[in-house]
Image (cartoon, rainbow, N blue to C red):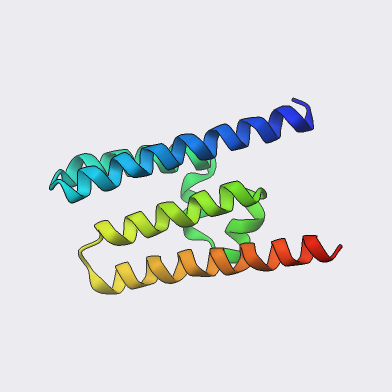
Length: 117
């Protein structure tokens, strides 16, 4: 796959995940929490593929490095935010939110660094 094809694929994947997240949030807000949870897991699988378990367990910096593209890092942070919304345990929810924020901060630093290069 050429660089442009890969970039196009990543953008399409990011758009698909954004659409799925909107649907998931609608399910959650509509009280269909189990369906929302199932679809969230499907999103994680779509974005992370066979490395889903690994990426979900490593620290944010390592996860960002494994994901590579800014679009994937952003999508992963969005998934973590949604998972935090679904989480009933307040400590786990706060952990997920913190992890999402760390990814977003990593992404901002990466963008700033790339802009300065």
